[in-house]
Image (tube, rainbow, N blue to C red; front, side):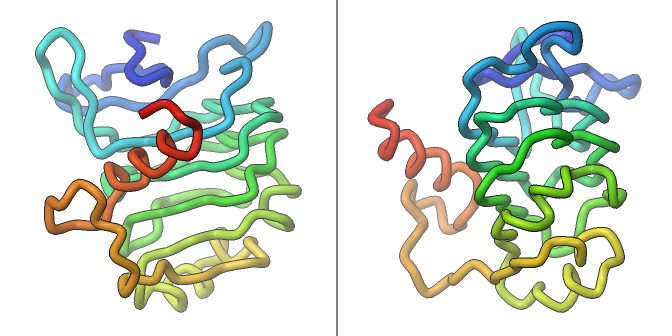
Length: 171
């Protein structure tokens, strides 16, 4: 990988303006102990900001302790087995249009057990999509809850990050 930001590994893409989430170690333990994967809209390395557009194949493969995944609206593609052999209880996706996935992007356990949280008004878009419809449990995020924790006018991954850090006592 090219760099780490907030505990997640990234590769800089060929266009030099975007980045992809990648794995840390395919021969050993990939992201040991990772419980929460927060994929932001953008990451910064050496003063350069990259838009996060992809979660590479095998990125979180084998992360058996993974409990929650949050995927920002900038992610357009999730590679095969990106979440192979892991079954988070919650998957949050902030894009109003489903990112490109295959039926192999998430483990069977994840499709069966996880609760997929999608933006308000997007339930049908996700459940009508061949691959996203593999999730048995889908719900729309409730915008009536005041979840704009950082008061920037948007309920997004930044707010979720603050909530998670508070829960984990890392604020």
